[in-house]
Length: 370
Image 1 (cartoon, helix red, strand yellow):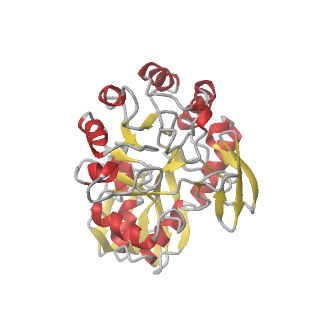
Image 2: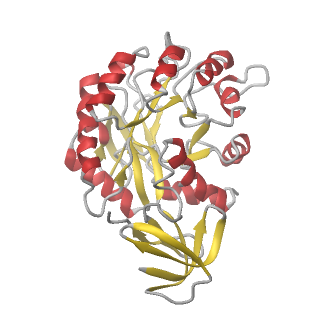
Image 3: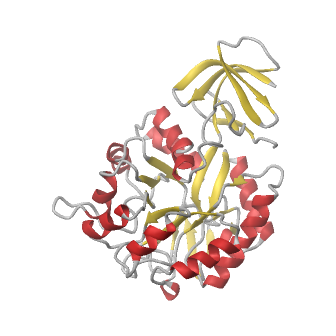
């Protein structure tokens, strides 16, 4: 199929023209293409979004370990422009995490029609600080444990793409040095000082989970984990741009602190796409009211916003459109080592793309059939 008469977003920015898709892959990008099989009527075409941090949606939570729930979550994401995602766990007993991870492997091997593609697993927890646990269940927190991680990694066929930890915990640097050979290691839910975070980054960590949230603020004499991450060009940082977790000014600041290294994420919960009410997260009750999800003590628990809306929010806050699109596509794909397959419109990559109007309102989602 040759798609033409479009504004196609490439790694260098928009071009006027078209592109060819064969056997589920982009095969040619054609500047100036004026004829072909499908006239897109001047629409903008951007890559399918890549959400590397999402717990749930449409009433389903990945950690339930329910295949039908995960399929429903994947269908919701696809309908809202997310064509690849990492289902993300919460802090739970290892047996429960193992069940969820095995479920992800089954859907990874056989992507249901009309669903977002599972690109791996994000293991958020249990290697976290009690002080900065946020909405993670403190009853199941553990110190970094390479043996337990390896068992989970093996049981899902090596599908874990990100594992999180707090650098101040015993054995964090040693765990990072070993685990970073298997997947991306990310700093998260931590009260670490600059020196502790720097040691973990020196050991091989290359990611920062939901920047600003569940970590100390940056101070001029105590730069902390944010300072340690921002000065390393190998480190990408997630940013929840739901309009609740991070102030618009701090969003703009983040893009300056991490130029070309921001990954927009949703951190969405099962209440995403659902009405106000009570929901469950890691054995705890979450109340959704007026688009804000909180635990009973008032702690913000995660988001009720999908990644496409986070992308539009970032643009509305003054982030250049091209930078925001890359932060929701190519940068997260690169952070999990999947950028050779997804994240941009280039020959040889999976032909997942979104057709949008001039204001970037979503008109159609096209998921490749491979």
